[in-house]
Amino acid sequence: MKNRELATLFERMADILEFKGENPFKVSAYRKASRIMGDLTQDIEEIAESGTLKDVPGIGEGMAQKIVEYLKTGKVLKYEEARKGISDELIAIMDIPGMGPKTLSILHHEKGIGSLSQLEKAVENGSLIGLPGIGEKKVENIKRGIQLLNQSKGRMNLGMAFPLAKRIVETLRQKTGSQKIEWAGSLRRMKENIGDIDILATGIDREKITYTFTHLPEVREVLASGETKASIVAEGGTQIDLRVVEEDSYGAALQYFTGSKGHNIRLRGIAKSRGIKINEYGVFKGERKIGGKEEEEVYRALGMAWIEPELREDRGEIEAAQDGCLPKLVQESEIKGDLHVHSKWSDGTSSIEEIAKAAQKRGYQYVAICDHSKSLKIAHGLDESRLMKQMEEIDRLNEKLKGFQILKGSEIDILTDGTLDLSEKALEKLDFAVAA
Image (cartoon, rainbow, N blue to C red; front, side, top):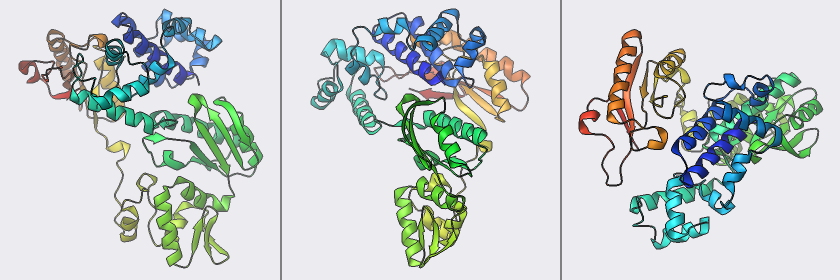
């Protein structure tokens, strides 16, 4: 799907326009379009082909034209024009976590910083301190952001990797008839940043599985394709590797390729002490295979309960499994509410009532509306007068709702002098506050 590509393009467009000091409403429109594209579950190409782009909430005529332009040409002229004079090195700095376009604009115009190496040097020599809005804490945050960027190069965040893998696995199951297809690796362990995505499958027709995999619509490039292995590059440059294994080895292979490395090393040590061997092909006693079809068989052979993939980091989970005291993971059904939601009052896409109804459908008991405070004008932040009116609307809605409560909140900016962007009097009326 092109949804993610469009979300990225619109977000980048907003960054560039904000960096240039363009109209805040224009910047906000692109950020809103980015969020809509990122949240959209239906394929944007299908929507465009059916002529119903105008029916997507929040997408106006101008943005719809840009979407169609991108789907037809792979480019958006307005973006290409905005990019003129903005180097790739400058764009790369925008990817630093916590580095907003406004801060980058100050660094660029005050210090001439135009590359990551120049920024790193300025951070180390302390020359940024004293620039407008930049103190020691801000510099420390920039330094931490650079470290995070360097650590995550060539990686994908979980929020992008999970939907991509889920979509591919569901398509493979549907088109091949094999239900034993799952993602493994760090994605199955739900790590925050993912490198390559590993997918494991088993089925009667191996060639059909690998052929289907290499001909998915998400494929940008086929790196390798054989009867039991295939590798592709998908949207966003993410490499996805597929392995098709024998059915009686599927559980052992799933355990092995899920990892982590430390977890697996510990398991192999325990297996050796028990006189058995475990690998991606199964559990063996001498030359005799004694398990491996199901993942649980691997752990059972080692005298322990099956361990949730999210726990497999060699941080005490093996000892807990041996002692029969593994912790229970939090289930989605146990989440009772959301304490940070933005509405149409600032930069959200839904009304408070729509948010409340959607939260109720999820089984939530409460939701906190935390729109931006007044200093964040680019996101239509609420001044205290608008905040009071919003509270009145929340009171009216709470009178109608049964078994559900909307909490009065705010995402309050911390100003450069350390004070909050909201008076004590207004703060006292809030149920919940987020300081940012």
